Length: 69
Image 1 (cartoon, rainbow, N blue to C red):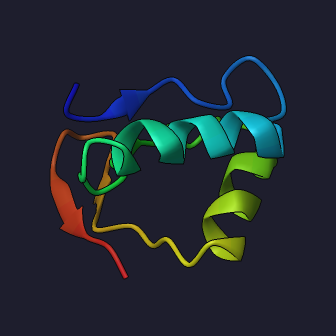
Image 2: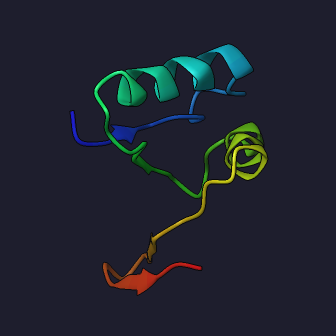
């Protein structure tokens, strides 16, 4: 698995769910990669912020990629 998709689209993301996501990648010595939908629940973004994650790029509606910040 190269990235997780669909997180937060079915409601809030619990701390335990985010812990499992990280453990999946960390146990494989891989970076955590998540494709995040703009409609994802805000709790997902809170977990990103609390744990120091940032976006590398943003997919716009027109299909173009922008560099994230």
